[in-house]
Image: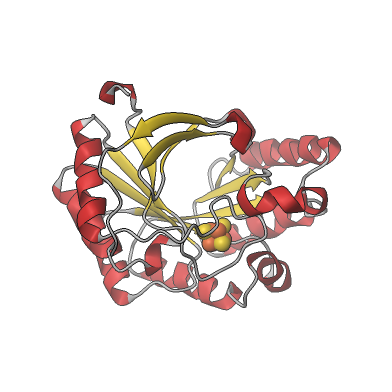
Length: 258
Ligand code: SF4
């Protein structure tokens, strides 16, 4: 592939290993672990290709021991970083690196305690909320992202109220897409076309009404093209379904064991 065909911002999977087991997980475990050295070499390759913004995702990036070093490496290279986390386990070292590197953190929270824990497959709700508060106190820029599944229309107002109460400034709603673990659960979790239209209408209204207090967004993978560097080094344009993905090539740095 031509290096200059990459967008300026990419999602970078440090690992697919995770401490949750979300029913809709887009990237379930693949058993591959990669060393910090290899991950840094991949980042350098991306920077040489013109990439200027790295969005660390997973799996759960916060439990990868390399994350603090990777965040500092990105900052030292003059690029920007973002992290998406389930917030279940964010160590002091990770929090310090997030703070030092000016990283924006997206925390996944999918509804009230019962609903959230049922979707993520563990008792993560309280720890996730505690992480959000800890990051706010540490002045790390945070936002919330919420996956919407069938029958979950009430979650829209729940998440909006939560963010307003917690003084969070940005909330992104992600309608369920049948990728990864979600493929097998499509019948249970996929929004009907009526739900999708009504949820989107609700989000647009909230966005208009709350424009000064909360930036409400609708991020639908069905209409986006996300450039992802997967753990095995593949560069993939991910869309609403795996059969629509485009394989662009490989970062050229082979996966070496950790
Ligand atoms: S969606 Fe994220 S938090 Fe949930 S299992 Fe997958 S990687 Fe882990």
